[in-house]
Length: 249
Image 1: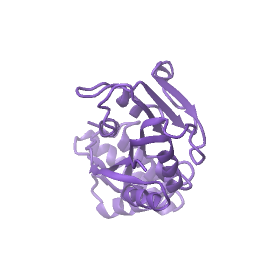
Image 2 (image 1 turned 30 degrees about the horizontal axis):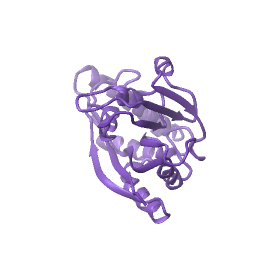
Image 3 (image 1 turned 60 degrees about the horizontal axis):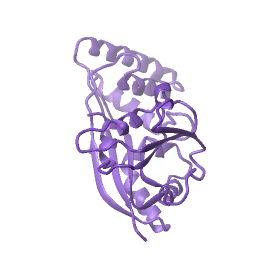
Image 4 (image 1 turned 180 degrees about the horizontal axis):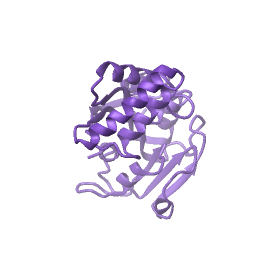
């Protein structure tokens, strides 16, 4: 089970007719997981796929159960008070200008008792098989500290999710923490497009301002390819998810 399927499972789609929003949906991998009616679950009646750009896969755009919406994620969410039953968000919080204010908006659009699954990778925990552990640590530290995505980022966001919820509650958006969980899925692929390759590419980019380190990082990438070809490569990163229930008050 991958991170998208885990997030969908945590959303507790245990009743029919739910209206769900995936905030920061990207191409729609979590949307697909939400629509997959696994045993003991019901497919939502409607999934709002929200992001700041249009990247949703064409087949999901054509699915009558999916409504694609484009908006500034740092602004008000495009729903009425209490309109949604569930909200899920994966790897979005680090790119927001004020994630606490965003969480207050999520609280507003959820019905009382509705659930928010707030999930994020903690990039500081990225693990790569390598023959040079010190170089790997240096590169991961640099990647974690750098803005490794478009705009702002926070490589330590996974470990901060509970604090975000507590701060939002102090500001008036009352949440009950239902669960807090983490996992680290193993990945052995290092071909182009694989998760390990994508993260390693970000690591490589973060080293480019230092010519000496950039050269060492390029060699490190080649070593990872070789280890993968020999069947000796492993990549993991810790994902953290908190399930928040909107208080009735």
